[in-house]
Length: 318
Image (cartoon, rainbow, N blue to C red; front, side, top):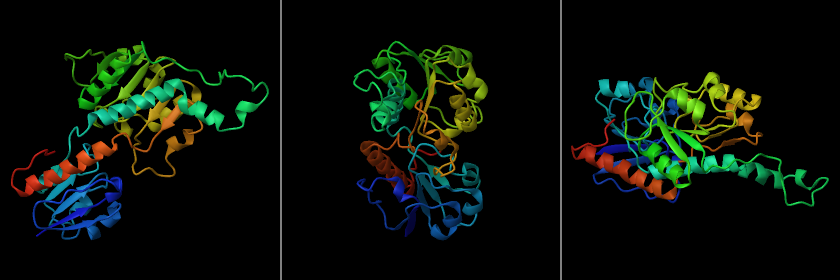
């Protein structure tokens, strides 16, 4: 009988139905499992399910029965893939399970940032608005910028990036793409220099790789247009967080909206949390993927990957 351990069930909303695997099994689940807890909790497990709980080589080496890891996400940077390849552990994931939902979140962040929606909400939630001369319907505390007719540069040309491009074009934006290694495409491509110097907004939809890590440091952020903003719903390490904080504090960057940080789970000492007082900064806790519909589809496919592995026809292999 297979023993399946779901390492971080709390990553899935309570209303999401987990399909029953189609074979005889023992199912064990935990709200969240960090590295020091992994060996004890996954002991004798043959299959592990993880959304974001880490599976690194030192712990994997102590789990000789583990044969398969089902990543209930697209990204797999929390799993030591090299160790798994060397030791015959099959790793599957769920590619592009709902590209539209992440793109919607990115577009929502962009609109909220440009229209200063949260800043004006906070204004009315404070005592500042009814000071001297409060009898007015005109509030000019925070500068608002139109989104239509502005140029957006999308980093990444996968399904999420293209979904974002279609949505942005639908509200009248001029859409261009940048890819760190590709130079030809049916999509309108620009160079990195053009991306930085001509785009009013940059939205990140790329994996974290050697070519994308620290793609945006203080130097790149300062090269962006003075009134430009950046949106990150991809991976935290694509933007250097300390440099982003400096650029926002100094006024070198007009605004940023972030749904992902470099070190997850989010920690109380996360440096970007120190920016929450800024009207030109929005941060959400990695929820861009988590609509009700996408989470259900995600878990359906993660369990399907397990069924297919047991049936000898594994799919969605990393």
